[in-house]
Length: 486
Image (cartoon, rainbow, N blue to C red; front, side, top):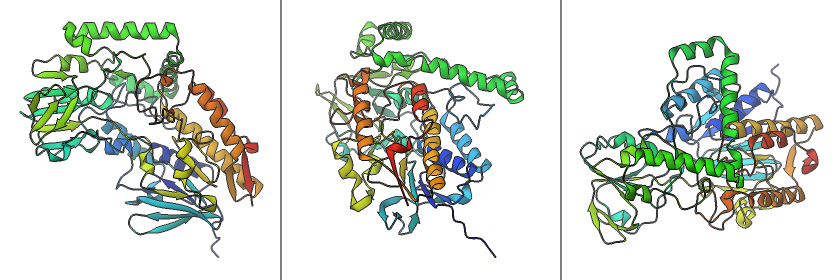
């Protein structure tokens, strides 16, 4: 006689790094009844979606990979996106996760009903689960600027996150709108192909040196034969990045050092004083995301490249008109304008206990208890949820800590014979008040406009302290902060 699987059913939304980490650790801890629902036809999340030329991670690869799944043969210190996607696919296969994945399943609504979650998908299918875990991430919904006339443009236009691989840029007049993370990777890759490149900059960025460094065959062999050496290398990178955190809490020493490094880097690579002036930020370092590149500044200095800082008045059928009235015709417009970090929730209806709509819960501020849970939403957890992003280190550290914390709650519920776990209102309110107080002491709370802040000025993306504090606080769940019920 076949025994019925009595373990709780678990729905994980998204098969990116966070969702896959959750699945791997569920499996290791005896929770075998889980399904990953992925809207696309492959795993990878951000690294599946972003395929523009030059795409890479700005965290070294040995740190931007799971501590329990090291890769000894990363090609470079900062490996390209394609190699990261291959890593994700390989760990999916190694841990036997594909049978647990339902591809082409875009979640449209979820509702807590009769002691469980009812899930609905765009393809018309439905599912039922005891636990509902979101691993949707935030860097895959493109943000397009609101520019008059954009819809009238008759040339080719696309976002870096929706790269048009069929469109050949060779010999074209190209405009790139934006000069942040994706732009500084993209521009050096296409500058030699195009006939003319117009780069529209709204705000200059703090850009630090990032040497192009490949791992030698000898180093890869050593990492393979001596796993401890790879672990020490990863630890070295971690400590180096973690030491940058005081910069974000108004450390004059670190700010002065970083500013000098940027200025020296800019002066070395950009000889034109007028161009350097355009590229010098006027806000505190760290207020926006700090970038790194050794190839962006030289690309901007090329004769057929122009950095335009006048602002865009409108887009016409044939090109772009600046606020000074100058019209420049272009064949292609590329939007390098970033992402909407929480907008993946806009087209999903989530209702918790008593029909509480998540949008109503969040109307007073995007927040989550311990960055993973919300009162009124039993058995629902988030990975890389509100205030779990970082400005200085690898989010892989945060993902692993969150997965351990969620598992601790689920195992506690199993041990107590409880069917539901829910954050208490008073605990969540106290946590959020303290978090917002802590954020007031950071450089992110300044007056510069960044994707770290919402329209209301609330910082809902970033953790206000270093990763060591986060790991310590998330090491074990305090059950007094939760209601466990039968």
